[in-house]
Length: 304
Image (tube, rainbow, N blue to C red; front, top):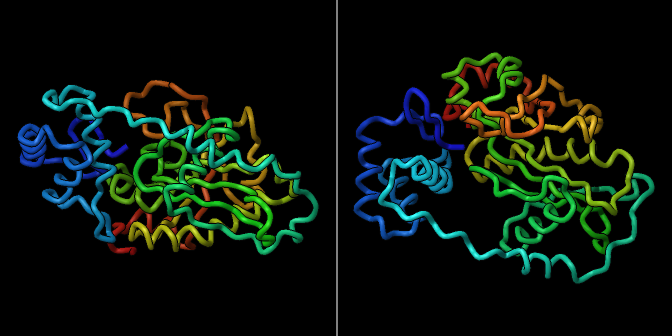
């Protein structure tokens, strides 16, 4: 979540000045009839809220404004109307073919397995439909930066084997932060160097031994390049959360991810310190041999 409310107010780790906060109030009051997305883009332009690659942090700003409005700080704005659900369209895209025949046998039979970055709206809707139908957590719109992937076998006539979602890192997790060894200030500054593996769905027809750990290894090699291309930042650490009541995390252990502790069940973007989810096991995977030095000593701008 891009907003921090405590001793002060922050956007993506940047503490807002009184002048910046007054500008937000002034612009949203004077242009209250604009769409929320336009307000977010306007504020990003005025305040120069940009990613290292120069693109505006419009999505983060949109969520920031929603949070301020929810807390009653921008009462002159009308809450945005929920979008018309697109689930029926996604289901139509999902359903034309019968359930694929179970795919089993040796992993070598399906190599080379490839990760395909999802970049168009139809594929994003299909991705959402697959997660809604087959993942126990379903699909939830992710915060901030995000990349989605299909995992394909070598045979073009076969269906995808898996779906992956990577998103911005969790704001604060004590076991992770202790394992990294960074301070509060450094965490806020360098958190963009950590990426969360938010969803990992092996599709139900893929019954291939060692497939999951192989996909994790492929993703660890490909994701840093794609993240750099899209967001101007090369991540140095991956994180994920596993519900131990459902999964022991065998594939992560097989792919050399490190378990570092348990969450407290507050959700990835918790600010209120109230337990709302099941405690989960935290796994981490370094992407660079000097990952700790980069996270603890350098700023993201110096590492791109």
